[in-house]
Image 1 (cartoon, rainbow, N blue to C red):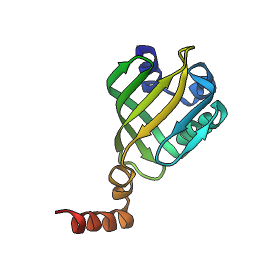
Image 2: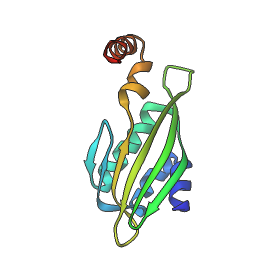
Image 3: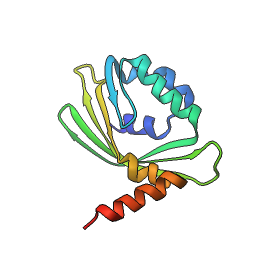
Image 4: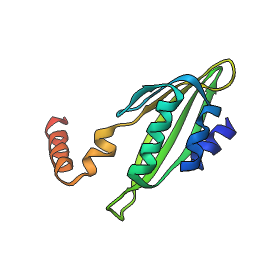
Length: 136
């Protein structure tokens, strides 16, 4: 587990080509924007992250392991290409490992509205207004 956490925390564009070392060929990856299967598709998700964002970086604060399953609590920091301000997204990853020790299922959980959309100028103002109207 320590090796896996270290890989995610130090992930670079160059590491994307080696994701087959930690993901099974038929692995599934799902997050609020993607639902893909296979190492090549997972590599495209991470390649897109490096293409679209400046300085993307994960910091794992907790790892809970039970048998062939693991849950990671993380913070993802990055900058949009045209902005200087660093953004942060907090979330978690549920990982299921195959018999060979590689990841079979990787599911990321995070609130896209709270962590991302609300930070956008026009959409953010609308979402914050809606959240205020809907809260008790």
